Amino acid sequence: MRIGVISDTHMRAPSEEFFRALRVLFEGVEKVLHCGDYVALSVLERLQAEGWEVIGVAGNMDPHEIQTGLPSTRTLRLGGRTIGMIHGWGPPQGLEERVAGAFHGVDGVVFGHSHRPHWGRLGGLWLFNPGTACGWGSPSGATVGILELGEAVSGHVLPLKVRGA
Image (cartoon, rainbow, N blue to C red; front, side):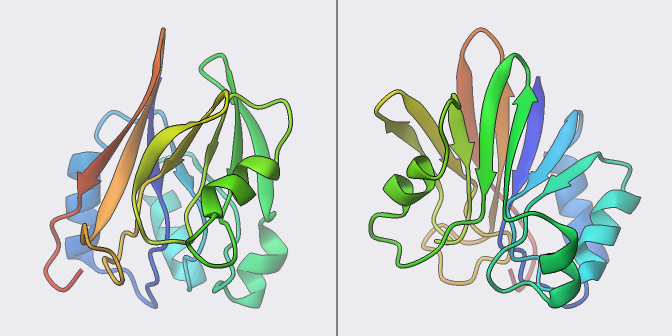
């Protein structure tokens, strides 16, 4: 199963250029997971309008309508795996430990917040942060991710080529 993972879009109004680039990277994904900080409801609505099944959580920078419309955490069953989904909180140091500790009985956790891509293991869990789709505050620039759930699990961080991101 191939899943698109995005976080920290931080957009007031999504651009057509952004969605053109995202369509290329998310071609053939079965679902899209958004780990919060949309910043505007129009971003969520536009992702859904692309025809993807979007599963999301609210982030700390999201407006009231997102904070009340989406949970802060989710536990999903996808591709035979149990996945925790959260935005994250606090400083970047120790974020992986905090998000891993927010769940019990999961195989892995997808998260955002730090604006820094991460793929790795902590104890028996895999952890995946696609970085920030807006590029702000990340040494990697604008990035999104692909989560592959099959015999093995892998997370791939992909550069999102958009001017100004």
